[in-house]
Amino acid sequence: MKFAHRHRAFKVSAPLDKNIQSALLRFAADFLESDAFKHAQTKGNEREHPVREFMRQRLPAAFRVDCGEAIDLFGNTSPQVDLLVSDRQRNFPLVEGSSVILPVEALLVVVEVKSLLDRGEIKKILQAAKRFKALKPFKQQIVARRQRGKEAGDGSRIFYSVFGYGTDLAEEGWAKKEHGRFLEVSAELGIPLQVVDRVYIPNRGLLDIGGEKGFEEKGNSGAGLLQFYMHMLNFLIRENGRRESVPYLEYAGRMAGGWKSFREKPGAPGSRFSGDNVK
Image 1 (cartoon, rainbow, N blue to C red):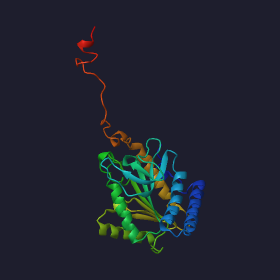
Image 2 (cartoon, helix red, strand yellow):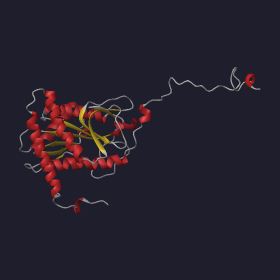
Image 3 (tube, rainbow, N blue to C red):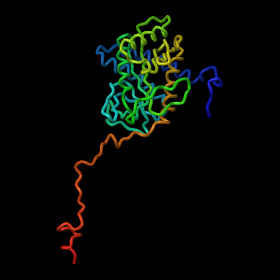
Image 4 (tube, rainbow, N blue to C red):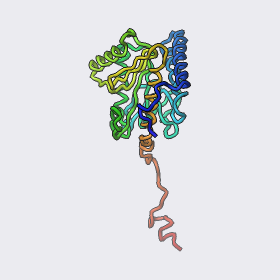
């Protein structure tokens, strides 16, 4: 059964609302605690962990959340990122450990975690997103996002998103200014905005980068975080349902080299099928 937007309740379910608001407060507390670390990489790792746990606790159990990178059948690799979401029941990483290497056919969602969003970080985001969107699942180009409720075309899509703990832009008119900055950097680098799907900043709001629109979060309401999570969940359910299985056999190659046959040819000298052995 499908529930049209106009038939939904105006208010968020109270338990879900409290769940999201409490998560927002935990992000703030974890960010503050991580500031005690002086080493930049350690600090970054500490700030990625709460976002991964948020996703692990709230996504359906069928999905797994890892950090790592992706690879395609041509050997093209992505940068390493903070969160990769895949279907744990149908797929497995090619390499598994504290970080993983996923076949790109298994990859559904990417989340980059940033401490502070500024112009330099936006450059890195667009460049990394471009490399992900250049991978070729099933040896085909990644297809564009669905627009205005249209049916998805053939091919695979990847939801590329950013969770930023903060931004160096002032609060007044943040959404439009942040989008404008993405637009400027996009033009400067020659990378289309459409490589990034969503950008969320706690207590600021959510940007739909490719769709050129934004939602500003008021105070500690968590409304932007709720939409960020729901957009991702909706994508996962839709895309995973139409995604084909990972071609693991192709990643393994032909697997024929080095095999020796013990089969004897009929008529060969010494063969059990030769006349010498017939009584």
